[in-house]
Structures are given as C-alpha cells and as structure tokens.
Length: 236
Image 1 (cartoon, rainbow, N blue to C red):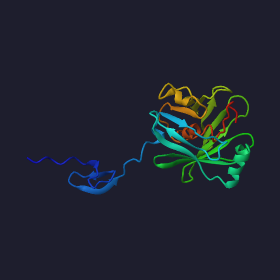
Image 2: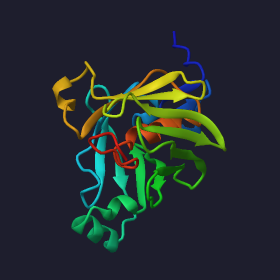
Image 3: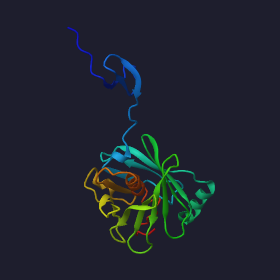
Image 4: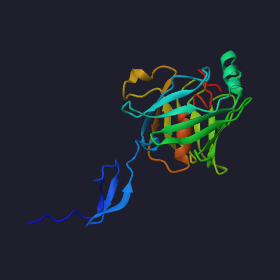
C-alpha cells in the first residue's frame, strides 16, 4: 500500500537550496522561501554590547551579542573623512563633529544613525538603510540626570533616562512613562564578570515592542555610549 503524499506546505527544498520550497500536495512548485540569514536584533530579550573602542579611537566598531554570548550584530562607524580621523587622533574636538553609525545584524544594516555636529546638546537622527526616516533621539537637558527624548513623526514615543547623575544605568520608557527596556552593567546572566568594565553593558528588553518604538529603543540602547557621547561621569 503506497503512502499518501504529504499535505501542502513549506518543506526543505529538494533542489538543495538553504530555503524551503512549496509543495502543493501533488508536486513541487517554483515558489522558494529563503531561509533567515540569522537572528534579528529585534527578537532578543537580552543584548550584550561589547564596545571595544570609543570616540577617542579613530573608528568605532563594536560587537552585539545575544544572551548566550553569540555575536549576532555590530555597530560600525562609517563615512569618516581623513580630516575627521586626524582631528580624533590629535585632539578631543571630535565630539563636536558629525558621526554616522550603522547598526547591523546577520541581514546587513538595519538602522543608520547620524549624530550631527553639536555644541552642547546631542541629537541623533535614526533612519532605515534606504534613507526612510524613523525618528530622532534628542537630548532634553544639560545638567543633572541625563535624559533623551525618543521622537518619531513629531510625537514623543519614549525616553531614555539615567537613574541619577553619576550612575551608568538607564531606564528606557514608552510615551506613557512605562519602562520597556533597561541599559545596565548589573546583570546576573552569562559571565557576569565579563561586563564590569566601562566598555561593556547589557540591554534588557522587557517585551517585543511595536514600531517605531522598537527601532528607537535599539538605536538608543546600542549607541548610548558612542552616538550620545556618555563620559564616565554621566555627562555628554
């Protein structure tokens, strides 16, 4: 007695591609679905940021890991001119220059952040890789506890707030003031001692967030020390 064919659905491609192919119940069709390239930053409840370099270096590039310590992304500075590199090498005036960062995961760039040249307050423009605007991270004050507003479409969608003027712990809230994520060095998870130095921190995302808040949280959390130029005192 012959076995009945499997029901319609997506199955491993018999042609050997890394994706799946649609079986219509009788035969294989031409519809192929590519396998995901890798984990998305947007799906992680824990992100470990291993920032090996800072603004005093000539180029910023650092790794983003998941809660198990596997690298799933990176933040890379792009578009620096020779003049900018020279300024960074010879002085600390680079903090007043424009900086452009790409947030990447296994699929490639997912966000582009531009911090225009500043005098006092920082502002970061958040875009898709194709140039589609998402929002801005805007410094709300200069003195006291650091606070940045997350603005999209001219509306406040959230904020990033330092716990106090000296601490390196930040609460990220939605427009209603509810905490949706946290940036901290106090995490009891993987290799706790790995994340005790100034160039490493942990991002805890409490639940899957809607857009544009999800992108704004990732943008602010992954670049808080570079694009927003935190120093060891908590100042900008």
